[in-house]
Amino acid sequence: MEAKLTREQANDLLHKYVKGENYIVHSYAVEAIMRGLAKKLAPDDVEYWGICGLLHDLDEETAPWRDDFATHGPVSCQILQDEGFGDPVMENAIKSHNPACGKNPETTLEYALIAADPMSGFIKAIAQIYPDKKVASVKHKSVTKRFKEARFAAGANRQYMSLIEKTGMSMDEFIDIALESMTEIADVLGL
Image (tube, helix red, strand yellow):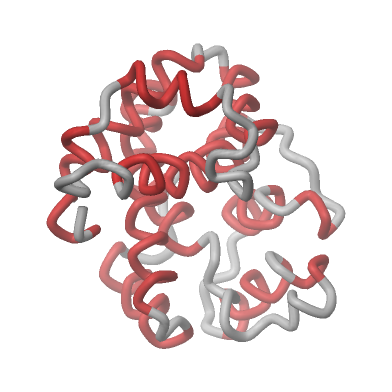
């Protein structure tokens, strides 16, 4: 899948529409995980998958999602179209990470994105309970243990994370890829 926009253009768009540092850092984390997943699931599309991850929350500060959660995703797609980067495959992936907007995941890319989004926050939450607050300190066993604790990082949708299995990848492999991918950019994430 050839990206219509470059990583640099995507990053410029992210910074144009998203100002909150936490949202930007989250976008970088999801991008990293998506790149890691693509290396295994779609080796020819690593850049494209990364860009989908980078832009999945492009409308975080512009969509009225707090009043109508169904707007989260479609507004991002409208921004991409308005900016001249309309791409139905990317738009479907972005919309499908929020099924409330009416688009459920159906493709490997879409399942990867809906799983990567909450996993990034889940791993960050685990890292933050460690004394050094470093993602490099987070072990696979900690992720699987915390996954079973419903009250821990309750906002991280475990059902969405489990959808990674629809790609043919095991949860164990997904955890390893997510940890490795986030560790690679730990300095960018402040973790």
